[in-house]
Figure (tube, rainbow, N blue to C red):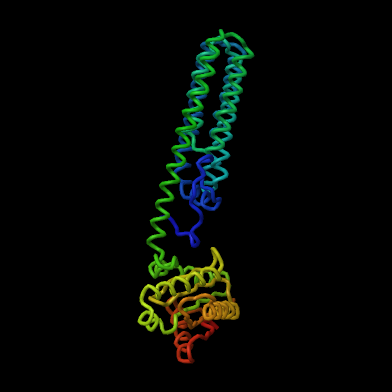
Length: 383
């Protein structure tokens, strides 16, 4: 299942690189598809190793059992060993994107370098090798999973080297040379189009999945998380982290004062605007990728503040309270009350559950309401 990113990173696709423009989104994408990518890559590595060794028969058919043929056989064995080594590296570190990309690039570079040596010693079959190069390009772009920009660099670079071989050896008529060069250009063009389309389509599918999750886990009016997302284990996970590492944790329950009166006096549209403005303030004053803002009920919001002690939570709540009460240019003036429950660092006793922690914050919220509203009340939930 795709995990929800707390802050909606940019999901714009850079079509030139066929990757997400935001590095965090690209990293998330590559890690999500890494198991599937590695399965494909391991199969390609084994196929390439077997393919290179098997085609040694063509060297002996062309050159006979000469020293050069045996040398080329040795180079082909090197490619096979590199492929097996890359396979082993992926098996040893299956969760490393870097290892996966390096394995793909290493095999392609070594295999193409050996192919150029084979072509150099077989000038009489250069035309057939040109067709082989065009087929290899399809593997570079499509068959072996790799970053799009790396595939393009390897494909174009190897084609330039091969074209130079065609010119240097000079065994072809001008029309044949032009035909083979055009074949290389066509191979790169088709590979480029196919690979780019595949990479972009994969990311578009991933983006659609993320956006569907965002619609399911976000409140459409405020953009905050909804109660459903909280029930998926957000606070339980933070409590477990607090228990494991001994870090503080605070929750703040916020409630708009006399919200029914706002709806009755100004209408529901105005009430919705007050809710949206308050949520925007909460999102702007909390930490990206660290804190979570949840629309807990109709006009209630819950802030989950990891690594925040009681004093820090009180300071934040007071900032929010003052900023909301004194918001310049607000059409409808409103205030909010806040209840805080905080688990101190290295607390010997933690709340029994996330519900207990929220319950402690709720009790403080009611205390703030009884005390006259537009205020902050707080307590330590673990001692």
